[in-house]
Length: 430
Image (cartoon, rainbow, N blue to C red; front, top):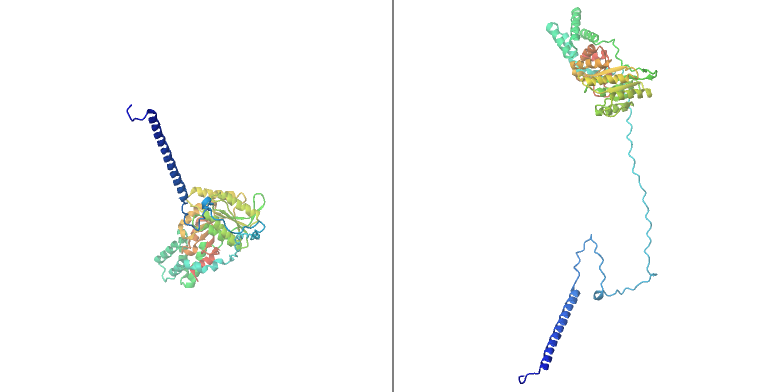
């Protein structure tokens, strides 16, 4: 051992003491550090604030604030607490009185159309004479002017013939009339205006015919089963001749003569035809029998006659669909309608509606219709709008049936029974 060195036991004790000091120091440092961390955490919790509330909006209600606790608790309110007995209940609200429920007023039913009283048919053509004469002056006045010439040479007679042909009198009737006028003028010699007017009037009346039955036959008859049936009238014609309108006006003519009428809307191919016919019927108190659009025309016509029998009506008018005379299928269907209606009894009248402005083309139409349904009379429409009144003569010659009614305007009572004397007087003037 070196001199002055500590003994071994003392060295070990010294080393142990150093270790202990180091451990104690580490523990102290850890405690201090832990305390500092805890202090920071507590401090941060105290300083943590709620996020600022968003700006208040009139349409947004802020949620109720959370209650504060601990150091943040608010001081208690000094308001005196009330007992249960001191708290007053809010006044009871009076029960609301239910307002009476006002039922909406039911829509008023449309007023029934006022029943009209048609003009009397007797003398109706005379009342319409001025209207007729305005459109026919070129025929009557033209003939009188030519016949009044001092010398009636061949050129004058050719002009007379041309005037008659232009008025659609027809070739054969024109030749007959010219020949008769030639003979009578030669015998007459001197010719005053009055004599010429009388001469022309006589010859035109002879050409048109005054002894023909022009009445529309609507007398009730007896059906196959022995029961009484109304008179049945079918109205036929091509498209555009005014057939449905003529049927409505004919109803007015019959009502004016004191007859009760049932209308059959057998024109199912034109959407507005049934509505149009029903409107005409309502104006004079006539019932309209109709079916679905595109339905069977023969079935509707049959039902119309059946309804007429049930109502003891005087007349049943059947409006058929307009059709081209060149369409064989449509013409055959028209024949079917007539055959079906005849199961109730005979058809008393088949009236063909012709447009007077169609001239000679109307004769072709008339010929085809007559072959299919046996025409018994003709209705000439738009006679006031044409100077071709001679078509009356041509149609009668072609069909061998009389013109029974003429249309002289757009008015409801402008359909008139044809009167040859009134027609010729309007033709040649006073």
